[in-house]
Length: 203
Image 1 (tube, rainbow, N blue to C red):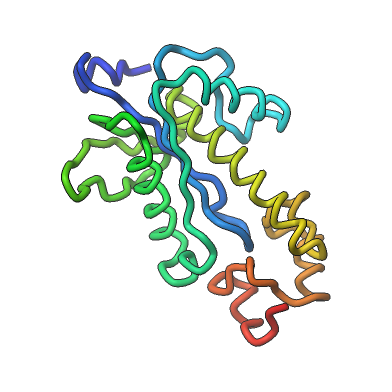
Image 2 (image 1 turned 120 degrees about the vertical axis):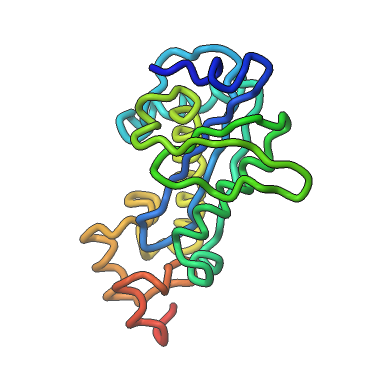
């Protein structure tokens, strides 16, 4: 693994950034940013961990990281901006939410959000599969996933007909069947296929 801290300089703070929820048909896209204070055991891509292990690690990350923040873009923003731009927006919000300003960010994937802010800018690297190779990105992946899952469970209480607590808004066969029978609800991304053909049938 490349020593990213040494690359930036020992005086710099490096934040890992990742998102959860780009692909679902419903719900927000959530991003997290984490500056680790020391190595944490067990970090990995959140998709490779059990729900129980993610929840355990999320508690540890919050307690033991130097700084962390979670932010999101809601369904209206996703439909207005498109999912890529909404994802970049949620990442910028997470970076701005850190109580310690990073000198550099490591972002999972092949694209960076805008890193020019009102009064400062930061450097950044986009790293494909970074959630599997960079601990700070893995930590961000875990926080983003656990927070979004919690949000989808809350949305299930408001819209119980769709089973958001199970599939978390992803386009499973069961979810698509619910949409066919009940029509979309206000938490569905109407800019996504197959939702766009149902704009006049929102529950």
